Length: 281
Image 1: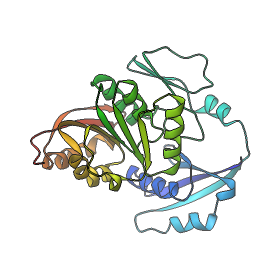
Image 2 (image 1 turned 45 degrees about the vertical axis):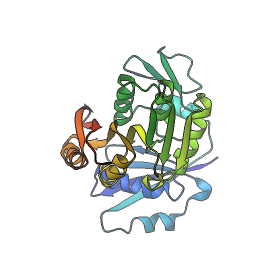
Image 3 (image 1 turned 180 degrees about the vertical axis):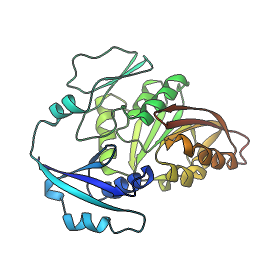
Image 4 (image 1 turned 180 degrees about the horizontal axis):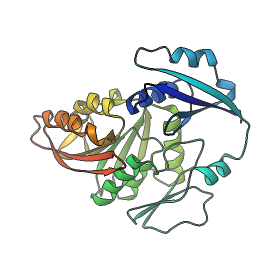
């Protein structure tokens, strides 16, 4: 099918504003995004593109943006991704992430196959690979796991492969929900249960481990809810923020009886581990 490529320049440009804009666009049928140093490329099926609707989205007090749109004719998207974006990825020498069309890729104990469809979530982003490292380092056997902001389901699938008993994957984006369902079938991860929504979906079920790879503001806002559904002595792993945001994250975590257990960094991105202790449940 044909796609419309929208190249967006934000003013002022910040990661928080980018995250807000991409979340907003995902709610009006934009399927994927590529972040560049000075702009964002957003993709939507050509038949769904509405310029007036896009212009209305720019009318917010926080920021403004200009855009250029370009029609991308139907093509072999697997070939496009293979040539330009999606290369086989090896994480900590223990997990390889590849597409179905890859024939030359490193071997590893765990292998995750991602079907590329104008998508983000192949593990190449720093936050995803850092969170994957945590999954590879921690015991997942028999654990109940919550994956917030699941994207393509890559963290959920790795936790499943590492022996998790049950995994609940949640994302606000419909494309992410659909992609998680498809990729879990592709990788035979039958114990991953996907839902479209946000933290408001969380009820009384308790989890041993929570992964939340979202941006800073959502993490801070939802951390209290995470603590309410996490077993005492359970782990919360969070990413999607920069090093200079860590103190804000840690301060909120401290108020909720989380003990910091270190963090990882890559290109200024952070993934942090917290242990819930002495909570008054």
